[in-house]
Image (cartoon, rainbow, N blue to C red; front, side, top):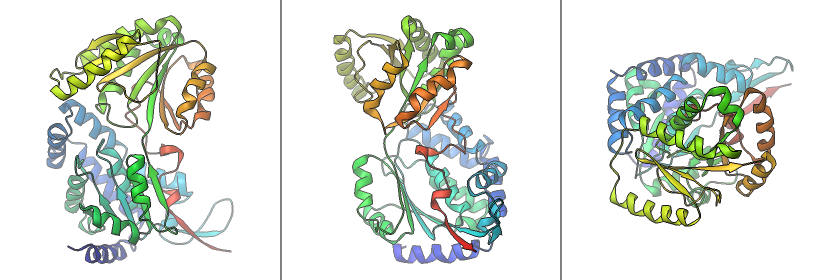
Length: 411
């Protein structure tokens, strides 16, 4: 179907969905999420197979990703998200009197919401389309040709659960169609490199809202208090799960752990042991081995020590050079002595920092977060939670549905 015909079809489907209460839409999406949580669900089985064969995930890893994704997309969580960001979810159905102001307001989502996705992790694409459906928008998306993720499988499963709602969603494949879609849509959401985001932005009219999600880095902070309160082996196991769960492909994957004082070696050794136990992957592709051998030799030349954790490498170094050009399937462990010094070292990456795992004692949480929050970090969490973001997380520091809404008000 040509793009112009596809857009007209989406607009017709949206007109029918606009008459449905948002709670009915959330209930339909929630029922589908319940089906995806079952390992016997045929579309989940297809998704796991694709993630293993195309994305290179371990089967256990694929299941963990899907559980993290669909456990958050329940009817209860979706409605709570709308209330949290909009004040009253019924504002998407018509004018409602808003608590506090007494004013009557109606929230409307974009007519055509165009999404462009990267191919690193599957979860953002499904979440982004779900947010669009909650706003009663028509979703038009382009997935990565290199790694399409599971969005098409999700939409196929939605067609079985709710055909009318599924008709409001469509995917395109060509770059020329993507450029035209960006120019014809009422809002654009894009994930990718800075170069690809700028290329997309060039096709978006000035009047159209454009939301860009570029590359980000995540890391962890470990203190002696965190080791003592949680236990070294338990803390290392939780940190290893954060490293492992998304195969270190996404922006929530920790690349570096900053460890206080003289505990760097102990933590690094425990982390390597935990990764070896957690990951069953042993084989490495020749290209990966060659690339890593070169980088790791350079690191050793910089007085670094490497530990093997199954297919993973833990690099113990005192001369941290930044987040870029790190070996694949590796995590770097760096010592620090003062939070202020750590904040200064990280300031060079302000605007590129996403999530921090806090392996610290209870009384240290506020102090560490306060010291680092000025760097643009928008999520602090406990070890073991990095790859399981809550639905309410303000991605890149912004709300999920509120920025997409236009308000009408009766004075």
